Length: 542
Image 1 (cartoon, rainbow, N blue to C red):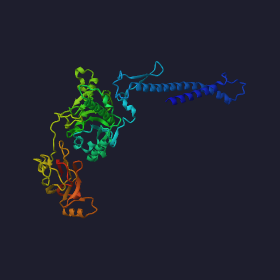
Image 2: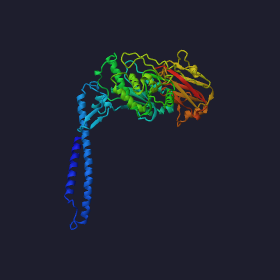
Image 3: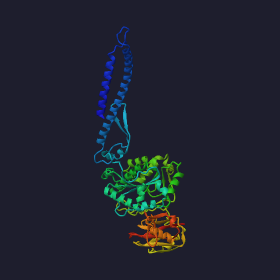
Image 4: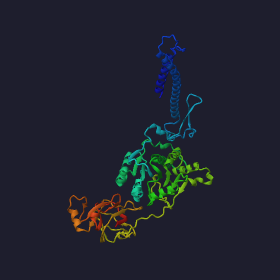
């Protein structure tokens, strides 16, 4: 800045000197009638007089600009020197600076002029100035999805005991329709700087939810390695141990980072945790309630009564909320800070006007299921009493059929009861070659099918590497498909044709007209499984 200011001043001075000297060399009384000066020179002289006046004005304007540049350069230098002298190398914030809520003011040389430096994230986390990319998120998985109605934010950390993340994601994705999947974004914020762990977790998510990652429904991000401050200088408050103070301070920073990243992704933002289950239909319930309450001045909507779980914000409010969290990130837990925002915004706290800024939805849509907290040694047994009992299966009326299976069911959870819509089918660990066979009493025209494995409580008990196969009742059709090499159908054994397979625990599709009518349908397991298998929904569309 100083080099540019110097060069600009020299250029300005030179131009002004040349212009004024040249103009003043011409007589001020004009040209006498007897003068030998040519008519063209007379016109030039008059134009130069006008140019002198205009040049003077330009000179004054340029001088003003030059002065502004000098002031900016001077203010920046003073700001840097002030920052260097007030922040010690070991400081993690502004706790040692008097009047940390004051606006920085620096003299510019003119006693009547001051430059006001606007507050920003660097005032609350000053160590970020040392690395230009400290606030750049590392997008591990994602397609840059924007413009959705709802954004779900899920911070997650490395847990010593048990990870609940995959089950949480499975629960959130379980009951979504195709249109809902296109209008939703789920951001998983891996709040760790260990790149190996971040990559490993991202790969686990990609492997379990390939379609959701490919479509952009799921995103995985992590912070820069320079984002977190030195937590060793935190003061212990409220009787909390040093570990707990660090844990809650880091949580404030994690939530703030995630909110700032999500602010331009959609209309509403919902804060969740990585150890919850969602009630079936949660997406429509949240969106409908938000629409109903749209005209009210709420700051957030509550879809769970536990902590920060299920809090919905308008994305336009996220910058203000995140800045408040960052301002006091060392002082209090995140749910306390959220409550303090309400106290700040209401006119009369004594009349409990806070209720106007938050609206509660019942019954709760999210339930906390994790036992082991992300804080080392802490057990978290909190349960939301408003969540209620979640249905574990979906009943349908299916065509009459004889049922058989090589799988052994657990207790009363038989295949027959699941097919009739009375229960879910729960079988011991499948092995290669196991099957479920539906033999229809009469050949039927099947338009489609749906088999959903796992449920809200045992989401991991799914069918893996399992195909859906049908047996056409027409022997001629069977023979034609088996012998036709150019056919796109995959042939199994005993006349069965493969028409689909389980993906992420669900098998859904249509049955082509040329295969109709169907005399039997079966599921065939092609590899040994590590877990039990549960069918929570069986639908044969006729």
